[in-house]
Length: 411
Ligand SMILES: Cc1cc2nc3c(=O)[nH]c(=O)nc-3n(C[C@H](O)[C@H](O)[C@H](O)COP(=O)(O)OP(=O)(O)OC[C@H]3O[C@@H](n4cnc5c(N)ncnc54)[C@H](O)[C@@H]3O)c2cc1C
Image 1 (cartoon, rainbow, N blue to C red):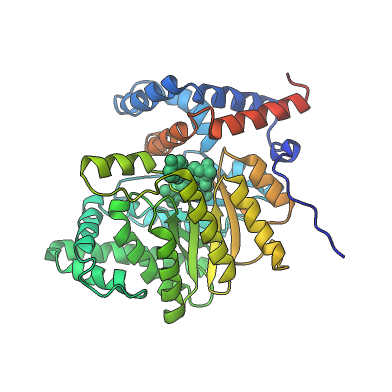
Image 2 (tube, rainbow, N blue to C red; image 1 turned 45 degrees about the horizontal axis):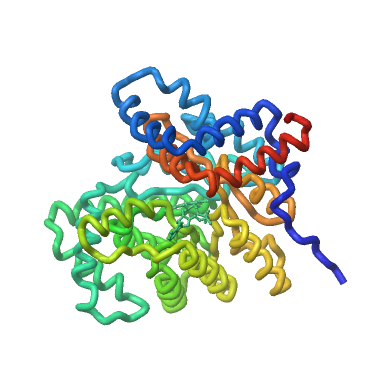
């Protein structure tokens, strides 16, 4: 009998093989600093202001947090990191790290054209807020909400129908603006389909998500006929997303396309809860971490059970969720390298998961943002906040780095 070895995420030699001693020490310094809550609080307040004010802080940022979490300031600068990851069987998802601006589709198509020339860049990510005005998305989302319940809650079409109704609330100008957003996204997805690059559409705040979902489903219907080109992102920290996954699957079945689903827990929890409280509506977020974990793992099970129709990405640093996916696949006696399964972690985090999954033969990537320092600041501030609790991710990262330093005799 062919018994496959268990996958372990404790192997720090594999995890950090790509980091030399100096890089490892730098990472330890950074994660130790991020473990100091008041420092992170101050930093996340001051840094965006300092950048706007033109203070000379870019050098410090570039050599510390930027280097840890970002591939470079330009597309070409990512080449070095991508090729290094490639040496260890790790792929790359290029993330054009601009947020909240109208950047047009040219930036994204340039990324696609570049990715197509590289051996280990199968995907790129898109934020709809990079090609659409936030206010327009917000208005559409609100209007979709208003129509909730007034139309039949059928699995297929309820969101789409509410959306069509919501369009009626727009002015002629806004409708034309939405059409331009649609055309841009179509242009990006067509280019990606032709170049054989996958497009991952990020999930952002819940109050703009409905139009993002509609746009993504429309793109999947066009481009995912025979293979997954376009992927939606589902945030399982929202209590309605497991049901939405099932609805999306029904839509895919009925309309005959492959559902692309990138599964995340979600990055905007505090902001979501605060807004819900301030504006006095029920929070869309799960009551506790255990509920997010439960729905996340149920979503994995659902995707595995329907793998013919769903191509999915486990985008997570949670060891259990990653391991559980491999166990489900092995339980089915399928290869871990299934064309509909991909794993991904953010660049600069959870190397123990990424490199050990690669070693076990999984298709796994690092999500690699790039962009001018001033544009990636919101992304960096989120990473700093996420890593600011010693009991959470920072604790895990530090413990692993220290273990590897000890193994190398560095402390
Ligand atoms: C490749 C990749 C792509 C990503 N893309 C996106 C994206 O498009 N949109 C996006 O929003 N995020 C995205 N993220 C970030 C992701 O949503 C999470 O913030 C991050 O990965 C931490 O969750 P985790 O699954 O790694 O694991 P864990 O560390 O196990 O979980 C932490 C997460 O659990 C949830 N959580 C924590 N405490 C509670 C609580 N009290 N109640 C309820 N839930 C709680 C939160 O979502 C928190 O981030 C991405 C992450 C990766 C790795």
